[in-house]
Image: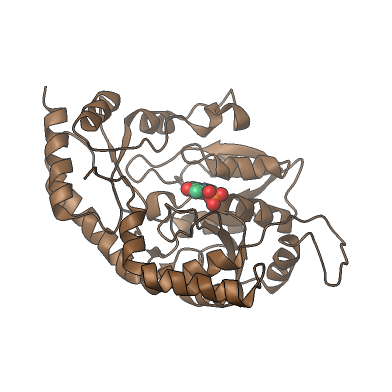
Length: 364
Ligand SMILES: *Cc1c(COP(=O)(O)O)cnc(C)c1O
């Protein structure tokens, strides 16, 4: 059978009876929007992250936009984001009418580098948005300290990192507000779009509850503009089933990552680096190597699917471009990254096939 980059079918086979029952319960009670499963999921996710409030919403991108709307970030403001990553981070800034300002990453972990951030701060800067890329958090302590000195807000883009920890504390509990995604291929994914916001700030939480629902303060009192961005009850029911096996799946992902580390040790490539103090949920297993495109083509011929996360710096994406920006480490990363198949159900025999194909692809 062909190897999958992310095997959602294996997970579904494991959970099928439980998923079917959960979906049937929603069809039976009929509360398709803001039903009881949504509230239960929010409570469980908040408890798991160790945060006072979790507000489920329509997607990870919406969560990022809602966080900034809730904080009053808009035209004239600047938000610092890493120059390497997924477009949703700067896109959410631009959708709020603010300007994304791109910062350099650390070459080993590919995470936002706290060094050099201070030089980007201007009187317009309102927030810093570190992205917990590929399943692990950036140096949040250094970023929070800097933010505090300059009275800035930190918004964690935790779309790829729900379940990760840094020095024992959970991703989504490391900043004023954090946003995650339940896109199907994320470590905790549903069967459609979904996302959530996390905060300890009671006022902000109340504000976010209004914003996900057309700014409704109750009984059709629309005092401010909001969005229609709620998590479907069906998706919440699916997530509750998946949450029950999530710890187990994260442990399996860690096993897969460790096996890759051992199998690929000594090859002419850079293995993914984890920052000290981090526990990753391994959303991706992303190598860095020279001749990446050639190697990816040879792997594809050998039946090994790969992906390039991400092929160009965000400041070169026309939608969120900053033509004068140049960040050499971001650019080198775009030329060198290659993500290997990664999911909890990847078998060691499949990983050996990947390693052998990679070794052959690297030999002249
Ligand atoms: C997936 C992702 C998002 C967006 O989440 P959606 O639910 O797809 O809108 C944002 N940031 C990062 C880093 C992501 O990987």
